[in-house]
Image (cartoon, rainbow, N blue to C red; front, side, top):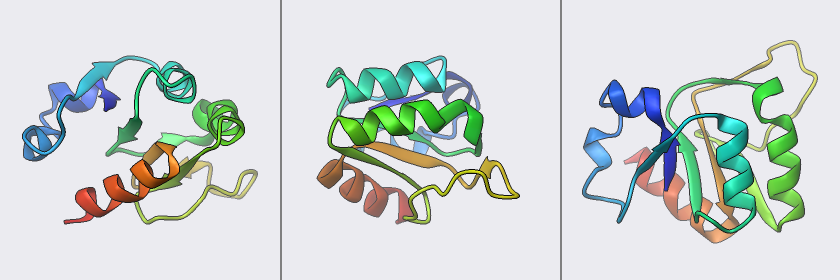
Length: 107
């Protein structure tokens, strides 16, 4: 799973370090979405809010690759709303993997 370097530094992923086979912190949310869409990672997840302008192109690429992107409430993003912040965080990747990851992160 690709995740945020800053979230890793802040130890936000510590509760999950034994849950996932590999947590790989990488910079740039757009880059992580591109890697995931290209099949270089099963999942990208963020535990913190993201701005929609940082993820909108990557969301399209994930969808075109047959995957999905949801927030940590399980909702798909609707763009060009008044609130441009995606809260509380997001998960992107292959559909069944996204659904499984959401269940894990909600526990």
